Amino acid sequence: MKDINSLPLIMVHDVDYVYSNGTIALKQVSLNIKKGEFIAIMGQNGAGKTTLIRTFNGLIRPTKGSIYLEGENIDSKTIATISKKVGVIFQNPMHQLFSNTLEDEIKFSLKSLNLDKEEIQIKVDQILKEFDLEKYRKRSPLNLSGGESKKLAIASIICRDPDILVFDEPTLGQDAKEINFFLGLIKNELKRGKTIIMVTHNIEFTIEHAPRIILMGGGQIIADGPTQSIFTNEFLISKSSLIMPQIYLFKKELQKIGITIPKEVIRESEIISFLDNYLESKSTI
Amino acid sequence: MSLEFLSAFKFLKKETFLHNLDPRAKLLLAITYTISALLFQEIIPLLLLLITLFPVIIIGRLFKKWLESVKGMSFLYIFIIVLNTLFINENGLSFAIAMILRISIMISAFSLFFLTVDPNDLALSLISMKIPYEYAFSFSLAFRFVPTIAIETQNIIDAQQSRGYEMQKKGIINQIRNLFPLLVPLIVSSIKRAFNVAEALESRSFGSKKGRTFYYTIRYSLKDWIFSLYLIFLLTFSIYVKINFMLMPLWFRWSLPL
Image 1 (cartoon, each protein chain N blue to C red):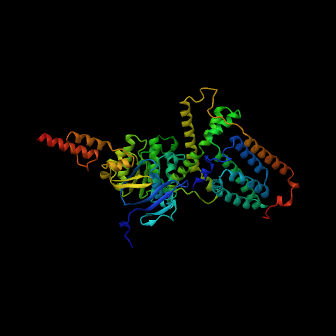
Image 2: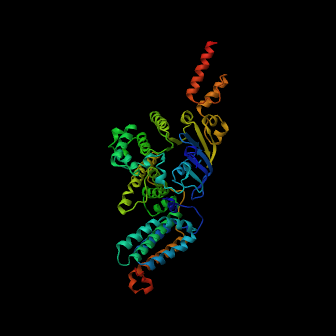
Image 3: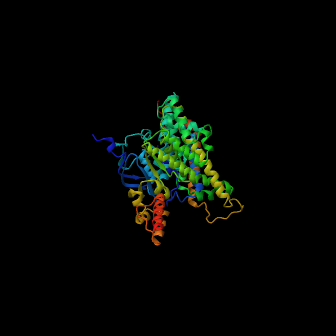
């Protein structure tokens, strides 16, 4: 028998998905995701990104091919069972908030985990504190601001402690403070050994923080690899209708005045430190 | 659960006799069949009514879509059979089947209407029936949002299922309680969308001019009159049959012994 740690956490094998109106959303998609990875799925609208993440917790079942979770085919498993391991957080938080209070909203997510009342209360207190929502605990979720309701939607999935967190456009419509909060959250979850998958159009955020990118187009995977190699490949970026990152254009401009920054240096912090060293070496001369 | 069956209520552009009929004639079809279906509680007359819809469905080349709409309501049919057989002692099963047929007729008639009427034509036809433009526009707008709401409902179901919500729960109380996680977000987002649409319309000076002219106009043609006369005949005949129901042959009044 194979050791469970040697298996990919999620294995997508030759998956096709065709909607009832005949639209082919996924075509021969295959990929492996290891435990503890942080992956960004990118591509133009209609590329199949959201359809792909919906197959991860069984919301939609592939027309062809299979999805394996920890080596087990999820085909025969219910959404309720899979969602204990795979938590999908959707783009619009208003699609899931309905309870009278924030506290009840979190409790609803915990109900299906067969916990006793005290355990549920402990978890509710803990998660509201972690997400800085304690002060609103008795307030209606419908009266929260956009950023706060997004936080609550994330909290209502994280409280279930799934091994895999899948975010659909987590930074969309968020201000800088909220994006920073989200960043802190994913760093924390990664430290706890969780696997993070994020569908996004936010190039700058992805470059800075996600080590691996899956580029999609026309229902297929166009490229899958380290961020450095993908965001320095102009052909791939234009093929997936994305635009080259600001930082890449900045590097190109610097090159025109004779400062060549190595190809693999693409993050803001790396470029700052490279330029610091460069200027220091110049001044010493 | 999938709400894909709601696509059976979304306008589908085709070139058929039914599609080319005036929207008012098709509205008359939906109303005629609904009233006729409500007149009867017996299997045979309802079955005959449903059969009379088949040629219309075939002419409109909509058999597949119609089947989807009927199939999509199968959970409701099971619900009707179980409830009626449990709670109605006399002829419970017969009554349940009759109710299923009645609902099927009404769904089919409205499905035909939604599938074949362009929302823009609907507004025009309502205006020609002397309904104020604001109301006619609102009606056609509501009509246009049916598929949007269907997509939104599916998204809500997906979002709730992702946190362990189970759609099928045992017991009627549980089933009703189970609707709240779906209905509250749906109502809230629908109200929000309504406000957004209203603001978008007002920012484009909606209603600033009372008199309106229209690029397209619609007219009741000969084929519409013939179709409408057929429907009026059908409705009159249904009412006649209902009034003289006890005089009808025994096979017509047949019901299951259960």
